[in-house]
Length: 153
Image 1 (cartoon, helix red, strand yellow):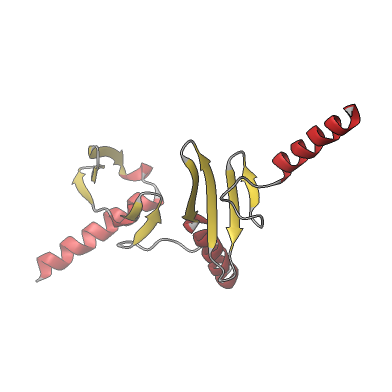
Image 2 (image 1 turned 180 degrees about the vertical axis):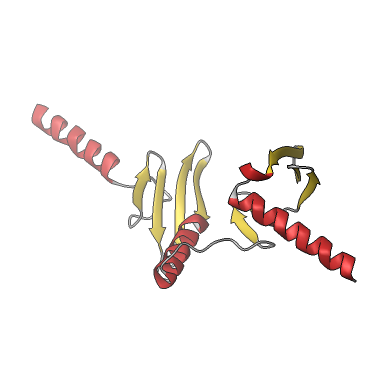
């Protein structure tokens, strides 16, 4: 009798810890304390999360994006860069890439002043021409070229 009770407790513990919670397919693998991932027959990636309100099922777009980027990286041999003026997926929806946000550059002698609009207001910084980073140099040259084209018209 006592041995039967012990075996019953052990069996229950094994079943509880080995099986996925109700609502999560048995093929899903656990990737975190309350997270399970599954790739269906169609190749779609799904993530199941245990929440206080039950199991939440969502398409794992981050995994798809990583696999797409990895494929592009293997094909080109380098990481694919986000092109200016494009949007990129985030957990909060599509957003413009940082390179797509216009930066205004004003020249004041040997100093350049940069301004960029952000959701929290205007971001301003200034640097001397000798201290410019590669990206800041590209921004300055692009603005000079566009202002020269406007003057010639």
